[in-house]
Length: 72
Image (tube, rainbow, N blue to C red; front, side, top):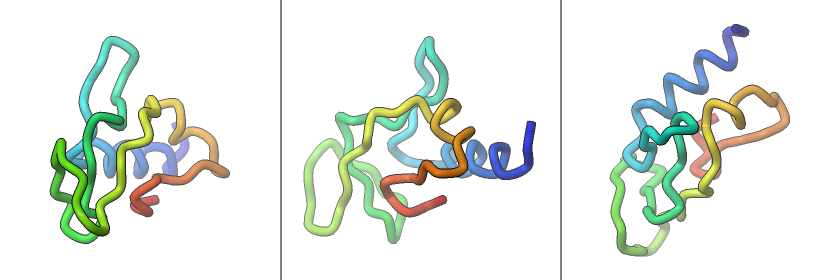
């Protein structure tokens, strides 16, 4: 596996809104994240970003994709 993919997945593993599913690590679209502090919440707050719902392990493989919270 290429280094940039491994690095991205490691970042996702530490994310407050990532969760493991039967399809792999997923950015939970039911949650919001504070991109500054990495806090997660089920409630929308000013400046917080809603999870995109992607399967992180798939999205991380494309160098043209990016994290919605700007983490990669």
